[in-house]
Length: 328
Image (tube, one colour):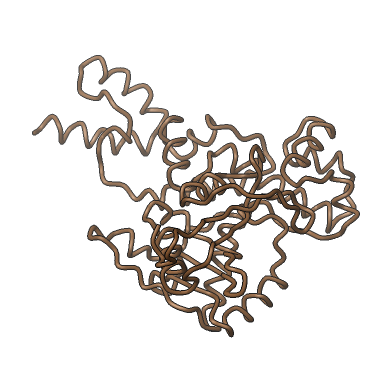
C-alpha cells in the first residue's frame, strides 16, 4: 500500500514538472516503482475537460506548425492516449480536426479578405498554393478561386465546444428518451447543436436554415431531445414526402443510440406506412467524417446520386416492411 501511495505521489509531482519527470522516471523505472504513464494509472479523469484543453491549445496555435508530438507535450499525454481519447470523444482524429478547422478559416479569408490565395495557403499550413488548392477542393468540391468568386462562406468545421452539464452521460441506467416536438424557445440550443455537427451538412447557411426551422416547428415537423437546457439530438422531417431533412446528434452522445431512438419515433408515430429517405455524402468523399457509415448502420439502403446546392450527395432509403406497422 505504501508503494502505491508513493508511486501516486510521484505521478502527481511528475505531472507538474515534466523536465524533472523525464529524469526521475528513468530512475524509478529502474527500481520498478513507476512503470506507466498518466493514462495507465487507472485514475479517474474528466475526459471532457481534457479534450477541451486540447481544443483550446489547438485553436490558440492553429496558424502554427502543429503535430501530435507538440500537442501531446503541451497537454501532458502520450501521443497514443491523446489520439485515442480525442478520436473517441470527438469522432475525428486530431489531424483531421486541425485540417478541417484550417480550411474553414481559409474559406473565411477567401470570402472576407483580399489576401492572396498563396498567403492564405501558407497561413493554413500548406507549403504551396497547389497543395492548398488540392486539399481545399477535395473538401469543398470547388477551387479556392471559384469559392472566392461566389462570395458565400460556409464552414467545414467550426470550433468544437464542450460546454454543458452532460448529466445524461453520468447515468448508468438505460435511458428513456424524452423526444418532443421543438418549440420556438428551443431555437438557440438547437442552433448550438447544428454548429457542433456542421461537418455533416455542407453548404448550410444559417439564415436560411433558421427560416426553415421556424416553419418546421410551426408545422410540428421538428423533434428535439435535450439534456437539461442543451440539445443533444435534433431532427427535421417532411410529413409530405417521408424524408428526414436534418438529423444531428451531439458527438458526446453518439454512442447512446439517440439517432436510432429518433428514427423509431418517426417510423412508429409520425411517418407510419412510408418509406423514409435521407441524403448524405457519396462514397469516398473525403469531407465525410462518418455520416455515410452511420446512415447505413441505421438500415438505410443506397439509392440515387444527387447534387444538392451544388454539392454531390446520395439519397438513402429505409423501406417499410409490408403491413406498415412501423417495425422493421
